[in-house]
Image 1 (spheres, helix red, strand yellow):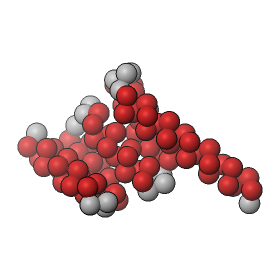
Image 2: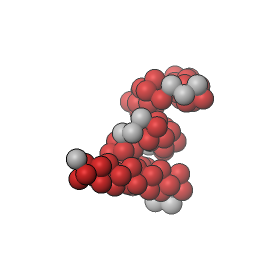
Image 3: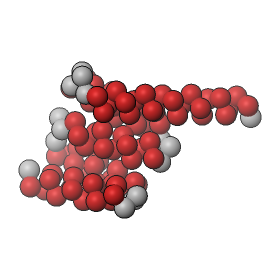
Image 4: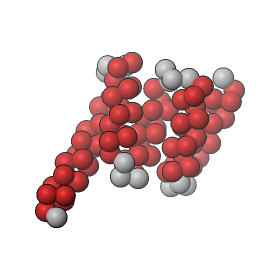
Length: 95
């Protein structure tokens, strides 16, 4: 549990510095220790949104909503992921 907290805090620190790839990696390490902790999934979803990885962000939010069906952050970030995916589809259609 102590390692989980340390990794999560390191991820949070990377987010504060705008180092989203590094933060996502820390949150992924957390998930290896505890797959039921929703916060690391919503945090990683935020990182994926910042990195324009909308499908990955949506998947993390979907996972959270299977565990906590009323998680507001997961709903909000999933909506942002859907929005990003729609913009990407429109851009691809224009090409």
